[in-house]
Image (tube, rainbow, N blue to C red):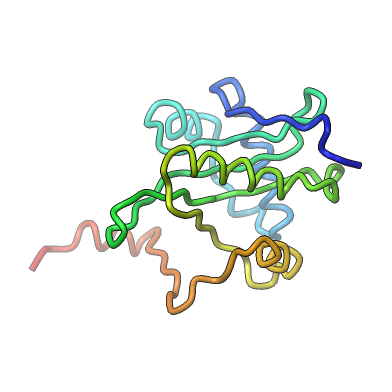
Length: 164
């Protein structure tokens, strides 16, 4: 099986329901289905009104079989932008055909065309198949860094705290 019938396209406003379907499928795979709070309205706002995030689809014979959702970030040290890959997902029926790699290749092309210097993403530490796959492409863990997240009550408390 190959990629001879594989094409790519950017998500459009009318794809929001499909994007949410892929998000939910990814959450199931990651054993976190109860953590999806996104709605079609939220995705529409952030993707197509605020234009903060983009998605591309891998399409086989007219059917969307996977997607990559991403946004731009910036390196102050290097003075250039990059792409942060938030989600990469291929429908299990279509795995093993190289579509995950093809999505990453397409995203690398987009990054290069836009003058970006890098792509970054995180991977769950238990997901050995994905960790091995990323490393086989030449990606490496970001050494010397620890990912932090400020969310929920802690985010609101910081936002509302008095400035010294």
